[in-house]
Amino acid sequence: MFNTKLPTQSELPTSRQLLRSTVIAMGVAAALLVTVVMPSEYAIDPTGVGRVLGLTQMGEMKEVLAEEAAADAAVQPAATPVVQAPAPGPVAPHEQVAAAPLAEPVAEPQQALKADEMTVTLKPGEASEIKLEMLDKATVSYEWATDGVPVNHDTHGEPYNGPKGYYHSYSKAKQVKGDKGEFTAIFDGTHGWFWRNRSNSDVTITLKTKGEYLSVKRVI
Image 1 (tube, rainbow, N blue to C red):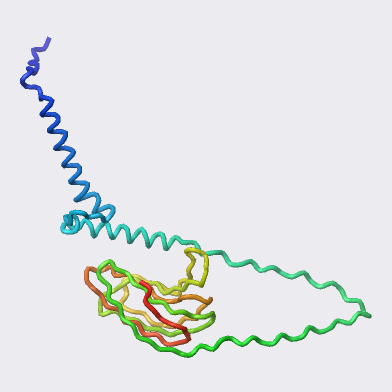
Image 2 (cartoon, rainbow, N blue to C red):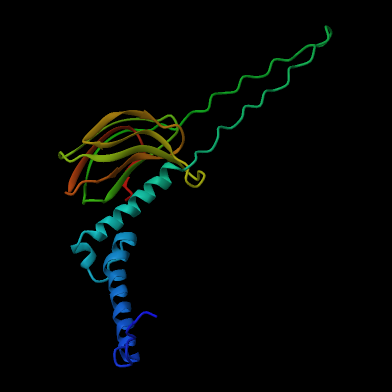
């Protein structure tokens, strides 16, 4: 037999001491939840400590990355299949085929050329979008530039009453200071530019547009 000294009754923790330890442990866990876990994982910072420690910004960045990943995973609808008409049957010699009357061309609505210049200022992590209302086959030329801070951008269009989540991207890039070019609308709808500021400082973007569009406005 080993001569093991067993703890006496006075050395064992009392019920009050155990309760006190449990309450302290629960308080520490609750404090960590509110000041660390919630700000860093969900960008929820009721005390403000998470933003001071930089944890709230981490949570906001996770939410932004999740939104962009969901947008990139959006599946565009497949193209409408082309149905080939059946070949006409042979025509009897005594039958006469009447020529179909030519359809009169339908006049398309005329769009006056417009020219506009707009500016937006984005804080770190903030996004903005400027859209043009354009009809199918309308063309616009554009040029935009930042004040020196690079941004992420996506130039795209969305049809009126289109399927949920559908959009057509004309061009996109990450961490650039400007872009210019021209695009032609492939449907009636809104077409324009989305920017996201991934830097740690404010950025101002100036957009110039000229072409066939009905209106221009900032939607975000």
